[in-house]
Image 1 (cartoon, rainbow, N blue to C red):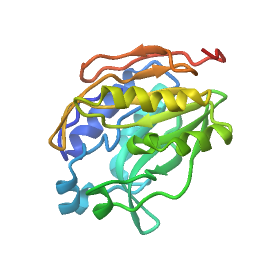
Image 2 (tube, one colour):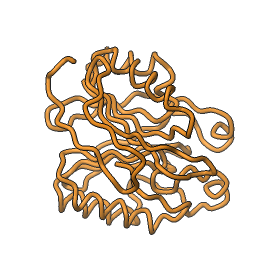
Image 3 (spheres, one colour):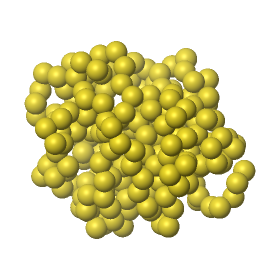
Image 4 (spheres, rainbow, N blue to C red):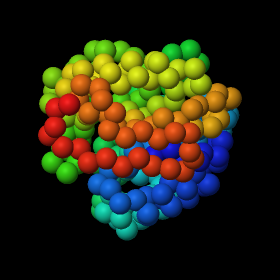
Amino acid sequence: MQPFTVPADLSANIAEHARLLRIADADLCVFPELSLTGLEFEAIAADEGLWLTPDDPRLEPLREACRASAVHAVVGLPLLEGGRRYIGSLVLGPAGETVATYAKRNLHNSEEELFDAGERQVIIEVGGRRLGLAICLDAADPEHSRELAEAGAEVYVLSALFSEGQEGRLLDQVGVAAGHGMWVVLSQYSGKTGGMAAFGGSGVWKPGGAAEVRLGGELSEWAYATITGEAS
């Protein structure tokens, strides 16, 4: 997914996420890093209301949309969990249930002032496939994808922001994960967030690194792919 994200507007972004989930024809929908707020760190730091717990009632429209479409969703949010603050992914299941949460492990620059680093890898199962979760800079650490592959992940699910001029970095990091024999599903931004301009390019890559499908710079668009046992 490449959703249109309104800076620091939870209500608008939850509504748009729910709209996309309701029209999705897929087992899994993946959204970018901090997709419910954008990478609006100053606003997140200043407004406690932008932080969400996994059971926050404001997320109910997303749960209803997952139930309506019988879809799993990986949603990006400022996550409050266990007394700590994370750049998080919340995984919702087709019954609207919380399947898992994942906290970004590799932080940098201003992120380290506002967020705690996650400490665990997370693998979920969707449609009989084992999916390992990652957020943005996690993919720059080759050990991150290697650990997930060795733990049995078949798909590397990456929620991210790559800004203009980082196409090469995107492809390099996708290539590392794909080189471990995993499919790679990338959801990233198009347009501006947090003062940065992104170029889109979300997509799905086969094990080995060949692109199965990629988006351009469209907003509120999605790339569909069927993940099989094909190696490359």
